[in-house]
Length: 142
Image (cartoon, rainbow, N blue to C red):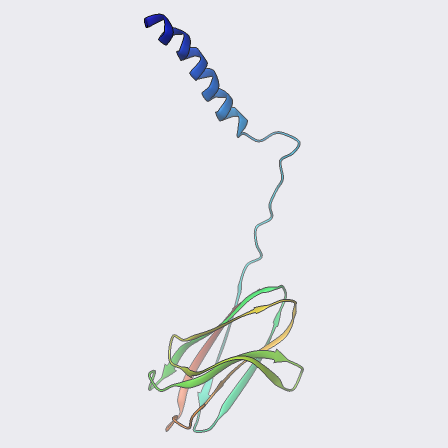
């Protein structure tokens, strides 16, 4: 039994050494993966009034997720308002996604399949904005 163990120890050690060095770089088949481009954050703010709406445009430089977040809504952060994402043609925002019941912290999430001009809108969806509501929208995209 002692001899069997004496023969197995060198074989196990050699196998471990092969596994450890097999994972090291230096071969010609190594590939370098570029890190993903950083996400940009654009912040838009203003004041929303009864039956009002405001639209902001922004440029997307790569395909990927777009997230619009209603970061602040004051003084009444629980009153629902509308937030939408769409495409921008230079004068009009063509709404693609919307949430007519957004409160502070709500998000609208979409995916851009290409670069281009996009837009985010905030609006009084149901006439519930009684007094002026200060807002901040954060948009995250490539």
